[in-house]
Image 1: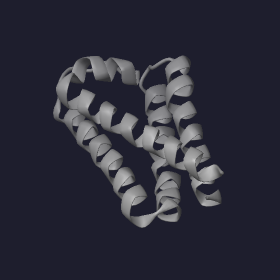
Image 2 (image 1 turned 45 degrees about the horizontal axis):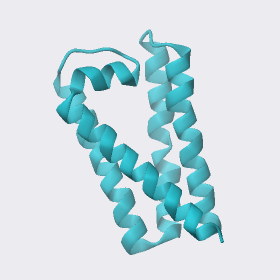
Image 3 (image 1 turned 135 degrees about the horizontal axis):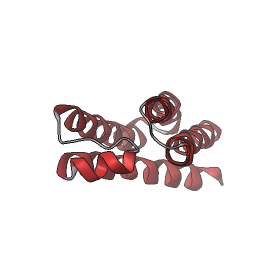
Image 4 (image 1 turned 90 degrees about the vertical axis):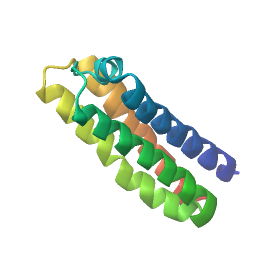
Length: 120
């Protein structure tokens, strides 16, 4: 019963990360503003785009070929990224609303996804 929900949430999260990565590659300035720390186009924004694209692809590959348990471990580790993003936004003048409402909330949802995948 949990398996469809676990896989569904994990797929949605992986696709969302792919979208965010693509946005950082294609629209770096607006993506940085949405991240919570406005910036000019730079290699760092491209790096973030590539990082997010890679994580999204890896998550989908693990779901497709390694199963729920491996994907759960990946999600557990991947939650470190939005937790780190929360601190980055707070340390660089971003708002609490973005830091906690976007980044920290994302980490919580990823951890929920990991728990559901472990339970599957």
